[in-house]
Amino acid sequence: MNGYGFTFCAARLVALPSGALYWPEFGCLVVSDLHLGRSERYARRGGVLLPPYETAETLARLRRDVQQTDPGVMVCLGDSFDDTEAVPDASGLRAIIGDLATNRRWIWIKGNHDPRPPISIGESAREWHLGPLVFRHEARKGDDASGEVSGHFHPKMRLAGQWRSCFLVDERRIIMPAYGRYTGGMACDRPPLRDLVQPDAIAVLTGPRAYPVPLLRAVPARRPS
Image (cartoon, rainbow, N blue to C red; front, side, top):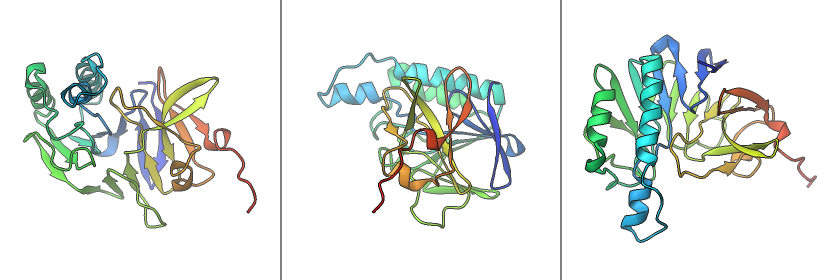
């Protein structure tokens, strides 16, 4: 699996190289920011023309993770669709998701791109609780975030001259990487990401394997006030 196992708020979790998060105890697989239909939205709105393959590629990776973990619960942490019109039926998106959702609970967390997920498969919620964890799209500021798992910011870290998508993990919260392509990213040494996690946080890099790096390697020393 090449995943990185760690304990978070008494939950034993596995960060997968793909950017998905697996919770074996509950058979729960979590992904964030799929942004399905991004190239279609850009073309529809007269923006940059991108190769229209990212939806199929993202769903193929998701299928591999689902086949590997066989979750009973699938949680998508918002911005699963690039907007409420981004459901290209020609690509068979509905059929693919319907197949993946067979015999499992599928939960769409509402995001800023898709406050009304444009697909009727599964269920939709502003946030969702399971055991000691709460799943929402965007991290909440403050100290009341214990057990929070969120997405939205697409964290990335530069290491050895290369940018890598990453999980940010401290004792209170997990901020997940974007699972979809064409999503860009935010450097984890920049606000607001730098200010959302504690100084002793780790970044779990995605790629061929998932592995942890102390966040202090990416965060420059702050100037004294």
